[in-house]
Length: 131
Ligand SMILES: [Zn+2]
Image 1: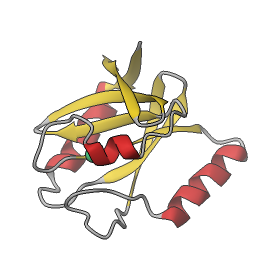
Image 2: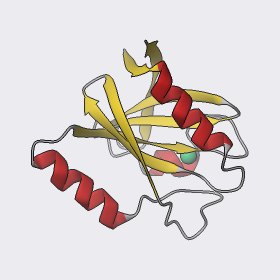
Image 3: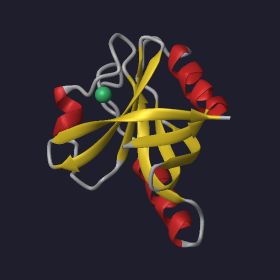
Image 4: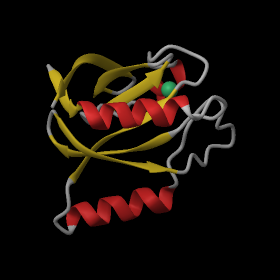
């Protein structure tokens, strides 16, 4: 399987990651299954944001409420690995809920896409840039 994203949006996420060399950036992905149509950056409120990420719970709640109110669906999230490759870390795997969420991971100037298909595990998805 693959996920589609506009080249412009993918470039924006890569630029956000490159601009944060010390702290993991994070945000939500909106759209429909397999199609990322928008992304919003949120504060990383993790206790150790250099090593992990946690999206501000208030922002997360507001985004889901907007989606229920007819907005674009929340289909996943993105975060960066400032010092590493765009591969899920053991910490990431521990947060994989098996809910089908799309994970975009940015690192080393690259992006990768993953889907959480079972608790604790991901399958990699091809990124299909469009436009
Ligand atoms: Zn990670």
